[in-house]
Image 1 (tube, rainbow, N blue to C red):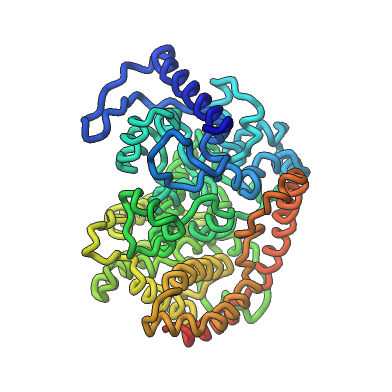
Image 2 (spheres, rainbow, N blue to C red):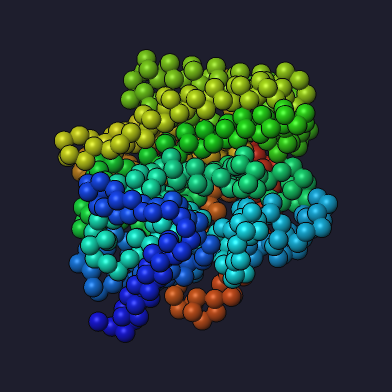
Length: 559
């Protein structure tokens, strides 16, 4: 055994022993044994973790799993290293010390430093202010920004057993269902597209939970906070860039060891569609909860929840907005529309690509969205009670109808083709391109909705392209033959919509990072700062005509 591995195992064992001892000392109740079918791993009440990625480093830095285990590793074991070198989440807290953050707080009338402001820490660090008030936390932990536990689950319970050096416990843990791990141990099932999107949406869309302090308000925007863009789960995850592998990128042994894997499923396509419906659900749920609170407080909704461009747009005439028309009453802003941009795909997929069922889902969604816009236009800045009611109806539609169908458990018996198969992806891609080329009356997309649509197309196309690489199928061959032409059209969309996010998919070489890590991080932050003016310029100059024409060309190139 190498010295590094020996040190790693000693550290892991010591941490687990200390954690188990702490259960009794902290008075969290006696452990109870699960049924044998669940491995007999003790379950105790969830205990929050307030640490950085130190314990994760033990197994996720060196590139090889502990030598003592005979379990097939499920990852590359270098995730921490890749995250440290590349992921923008670690920059979140550092940005609070910059001039922009200070200016924002000054203009919004706050005398609290951004690094200590609960409204900033909610999304710029994994440590909430409420937790800071109760627990002594090392400043170094806060300064790590949005690190491992923010997404994987801030609970010691799963860390203790997931990282144990005890072979039998590791084997038992490996066999547990992912949902069970999340419910009993707090390890978020990020392979589930709906659960992953919900985690991301808490900051990237907003969270109504007042204890989380995760809402970019109009005061923040007025002070200079960058506008939150439309959100597409697959594209944003790929643009970190990813420190994990997609299932089809893993070795065959890893794929088989996952237990819950369908080789016919296109993972990114499912993430776009199921994640798209989940993002819409989170957006309308935020409206419902904030409207309820505003109604109690006898206030109007925060202006940040309205369509920004309803007030902040050019005054050109003729205008594409005038030609498109408006869903609500003239002069009364409605909600942002981008979250519904791919709901046509979600309806079609949830209906099993059955035309009659699709029409029902589409009608239910259309009527629900129309009611939501009416509640916004009933009086200036919306009727809070009606906004709550209509938004809750859309949440129920998502929870009861669409999401269960889009995120149904996969069948891994080898006898069934996935609902997100290559054939399904082709249909979804064509449907998305056709609706973008010729949208329905009144559905002309604004900048954010167009960007959201283009991102979804990119992700599904890339998924389908990879799946077609070794195929001789006629449709796959046509897709490959037209690859250069399709990529050229996507480049046009990128030029007008700024589709490529800063550092998107560009990993930093080990040698470059080791030579000067601070320089690498400063360059990354500078790129992010420089990107904002580009997006604002593109938003101001956007017209949908080029967007439609580009997709008309893409439609001709698809099989």
